Structures are given as C-alpha cells and as structure tokens.
Image (cartoon, rainbow, N blue to C red; front, top):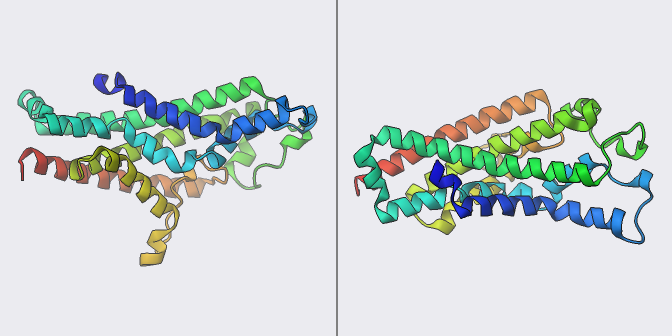
Length: 262
C-alpha cells in the first residue's frame, strides 16, 4: 500500500480526474464571473450546481474507471513482469498477498475518486455562491421532487449531497480499481488494464445487459447522480457488490495462473 501511495501514477490519476471535473465548472465560472458580459449576481450558478455540473459535463463520468484503474493495475503488471510477485510470495502466503493487493487497489481507487471530488467541491464553494434558494431564487428547482438530493439540498447549503457523492464516487472508483487489477493479471498490458474497465463501464451504461439478456440493471453512475432514490441506491450497491465479487474471483484465478506459469 505504501508503494502505491508513493507512486507518481497514483497522483497523476487523481490529477486527471480532478481536471476532468473542471470541464464544466471553469467555463461556467469564466462566463458568469469574469467575462464582461457575465450574469448579474442573483442569476449566477450556485457552488452546488458548479460542483455537480463538473461530474456530468466534463468527461469525469466516463473517465472514472480509467482514472481509478491507473493507481494499482500498472503496478501489478510491473510486479508480474519483474518477478517481484514471486519474491513477495516467498515471504508471504498467496492468500495474504491477494488480500493486500485487492485492499490496496480498492483504497487507491476510493482515494482517487473521493479526494479529487472533495477538492473540487471545496474550491467551487470558495469561489462561488453557496447554494441558497432563499437568498437567490435561481438556485432552486435543480433537483427532481422525490429524489434524495431534492430533500437534502436545503441542509447546510447541500452538505449532505457533497458527503454522499464523495462516498459514492469513491466506492464506485474502488470497485473499478479492483476490476482493473483483475484485467491486469489476465491481460498484462498497462494500456489495456486501464481501458478495458472503461469500456466495460460504457457497455454497462448503454444497458448492454438489457439488449443481450433482457435484464435491466441500475446505471453505474447512480451513486453520484442527481436523481438518486433509496431503492435505486440499494439496487446499485448490490449490483456493484456482485461486480466486486466477480472482480476478486477473476483476480484470484488469474494471479494463481500467472504465479504457476500456466
């Protein structure tokens, strides 16, 4: 875990995801606050709107699995190619090594997603207006009635929303980091180990399971989407736990195959 957290590629992945979040926020901030043709104060977007807009309109929603996998998967491939995996197994059991690697991957993905988003939220709360539909009526009406965010938005300028997305985006990224690790042991190519999870995420988003098998599953971005409901979140967490279990099983099978040189 220490080696992973000291790796430059871990921070590069976090930086890439952070920059993706700015794809909407920076242009909107310039248009409303800096441009000579900017909007009057009462019509400017809230910090909450700026923060959430960065998720959906800046590429972050697509690149999350890519960035999450960048932390651990390339290091796993380096270990396999250099023989470091065999050296680790001399000092430890295979089960302990697998547990450490999977836990490290999940934590790295969680940190890449959650820290980047938390920093993004803090910056825009410092630069723009806090969400306050009483003082600024234009801030209201951005969430659909009946959703969690509609009920949470008035609490501390949307604090509950920020906290939920920080955890939700971190959990989602952690699962995709594990999928990246499973990819790395079956396809030991650094580029493919980070792009295959992104492709799987895109296929899931496109409801591939419905077109192939007639089965509807929750959207993979549900835990950091703005139309969340309790039932939808529970179904999504269950779906991700199944995906996480599948990723762990594939990693175990693939690593055993690699260390036995089969």
